[in-house]
Each structure stands twice: as C-alpha cells, then as structure tokens.
Image 1 (cartoon, rainbow, N blue to C red):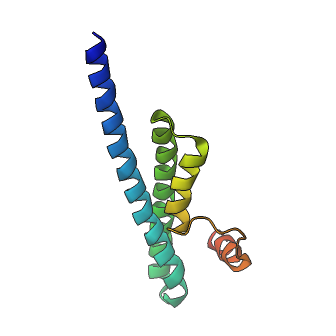
Image 2 (image 1 turned 120 degrees about the vertical axis):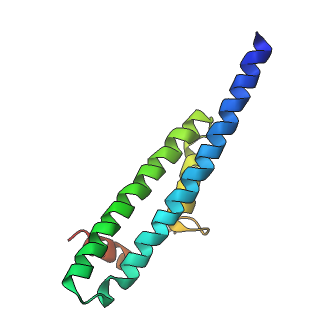
Length: 116
C-alpha cells in the first residue's frame, strides 16, 4: 500500500513539474508579446490596427497573469517557498537578470500610459 502511494505521489510531482515548466514557458511567451506591443504601439498609425493591437495586447496581458497565478499554485503544490516562487515569477516577468533593485520611473510611466 505504501509503495503504491509513493509511486502515485512521484507521478503527481513529475506531472506538476511538467505543468510548472509549461506555465513558465507560456507566461514568458505572452510577456514577450506584451513587450513587443509596447515597443511598436507608437508606430501604428491606422486607428483600426491600433485598436486590434490593443485588444490583442489586453488578451496577452491577461493570459500572462493567468499563467503567473498558475506558477504560484503549482509552486505551492510542489512545496516551494514563497521566495522561490517569486524568483521564478520575477525571472519570467523581468528576464534573466531578475527584478531590478530600483524601478525605472520611465517604465512605470509607460505602464501607466498603457492603461490610459
């Protein structure tokens, strides 16, 4: 009986690790799509294209945050500490360098302008 529980537990751990890796990769892809939109949004002159790009950005942004929440959930299931989970999420959101010590005020202004 105990051996069966260990096997099932190990299968769940492996499955959750795969799901976590997939969530990290997917969140990163959506983050890249959001960054691309921010870089190119001022070059789009056609109002229809601008609106379509904005709608796509909003969908990508929502999906990225959905995957970040999934990372938190799976990290907790795998027994990671809150700090370890935050390192994973910061790596996805901020890149390999992690979260900067002091935020650049221009980034915050750009982010605020995205929601206006």
